[in-house]
Image (cartoon, rainbow, N blue to C red):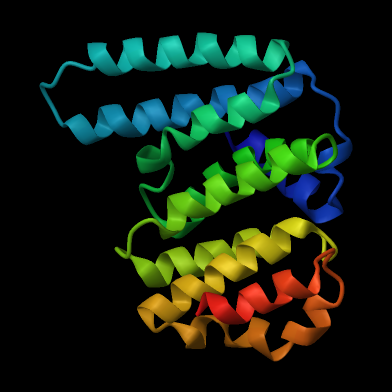
Length: 205
């Protein structure tokens, strides 16, 4: 897993994730993530509990996801990860972020292939973090980290920032997004958005 994370860090730093072909190395990313999530669930059971149901669950998921990846159905693959949102968001911030980075790897591929699918996927990702107000401060910081993964001209930045702005307002965490707000106009000028979409950000709060 440490090797996978090192590879992901390299991808994120160079921002070349979207140009990667669908290879066995890419499939290895989600297999390792599934293995980690499975281990976390089994550990949470405690001593004496039977992990059979969890073993069966992840064996089925691994097969389904392998098939999706082999068929190039990346959007569907990402959505299968979203169904594991409870497991994805469990743990410390750095652990959650390392898991989400695997999903972002595939989001970057979608960004280059279909703008409509990409928008839908990013909105679903954001909803995982904002559909409840528990651990709101942590979720706001995580969303800010996800925001920074994308290129400054990416439409994802608009979608994520709008969600952060609304979520922070709802939970009174404007201090957490203050650094972004200070450079808001400069950032917004680089996003491929309309004047109507610009106004939606102000209306989000």
